[in-house]
Image (tube, rainbow, N blue to C red; front, side):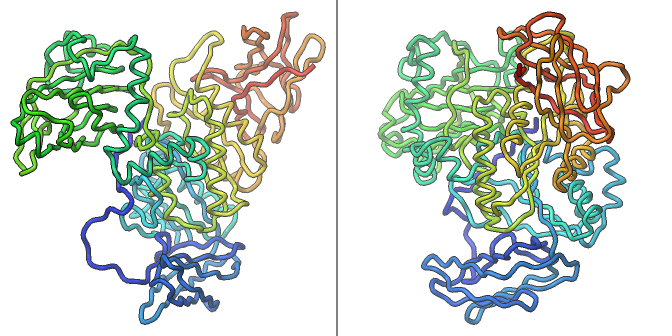
Length: 633
């Protein structure tokens, strides 16, 4: 999985600039935008508090009054699809803003992690697709990557809608562009594609505040709000949760207050752990490791306070100075800089204790030694690039994650990448994510919160297409338990429970050795079919019939077919205790019949592995998704 490049822009923090004009439109309104057809058009923006704002969209007019905070919304009637461009002009007092070349059609949001982020130029036949991508009625909006602890009105940087063409499509999401292209061909109306995704992200950073509060609770949301205003205060509140975890893992030890309780070794080099030859970390660079450094301060230095710079630490850290928590960060490309107040310091020897946890790939120090230092109040720097010691922590699990965590924190990506879209009406949204949430116990609840938030923002009729995880990883020649398979089944169940959602499986499109399969066209074609209301294969029920189990399916056209075999493979029958066995399937129209061989059968599983081999398709070459069903008698 691609790991996210952290760009945190806290609420209320911006670079010095000239005073902004009193009148401005929402971030989604720029030249070349596509307006959703058959839905009321809401144009949001800001003006002087209490100002009268008037607007013209084509020949339609609207007027509104800005609230005390300057926010306004102009409401225009719904419009039919049209490739004839229109302009939007908004005026307040002596100021006016004009947005030109607007079309009316269908708008789709595409979001998720790296497989959604995967660029068109890298897809199968990507070069040719890019070269042939010109279409004046296909418009693209690339949302820049950025995060915020609170919802924002603006994106992380200025972005504009672009007309699809070789100059604009190559770096755009392959799946998103293909969906737009397929819908253009099928519907013949302008299509707007908005892409907002982030490699490696969990679903939680994409939740809106309402879903975040439901998932994390009011306390977590309050802690996140506190972090936006006072990072040290928030870290201080979070620290007991972290220390309780460590105490439970280590039998009650507290190295941050008693460093000498650990057995220390010199740090071989300020490099990632894979480079620490002859240490256990070179072979197993995951887990938690303590880093210790002592620094001597004068009374004046301690009284003034310092800033502790640790460079980049991969993945996350919990940092203490003299037993006090001063920082907690997740980010494999964010440099740490923690303010240490005078009350945490003393004249003489001060203990810096950093617990670094790595969950994937290389871990530990990821910056040059010169990026580790203390900055004094007057700007002088005390280098910290040498003199570190380490001790491997006796932990088996990973520590709790703070609500400001870049990869798993609550709403950080929504706040800067989705919230600025405002109430911009859309036809639907495509979600390609789940790899980072394999084994997340309440993934279904979080996903339902995500969808509810989107519909509250973009319209209650929003269609949502979910890509079921592709096959990836080592193959198995016997039934196994699989977190990927379980996630696929959760994704399927979310769609079963939601009449406006649909599933596009990628269970047959993956690569055994590459988590980023390049065949994005077929994924997008399945999503486009679902977007048009075309049924795709879905299991309906598993029913015991004598010595067999009949699995029935819906969304089938042209019957079911077992490719390259007279049996459908990938099916398992499981007893009530969870013991599973392969069960070859006999295709019977829109059903598959499994022989029980006289053994108990309480559940049917299909494609139940990280990387299953499957051969069951309908007459349109549409794959049957992975699933688990209880056997009904």
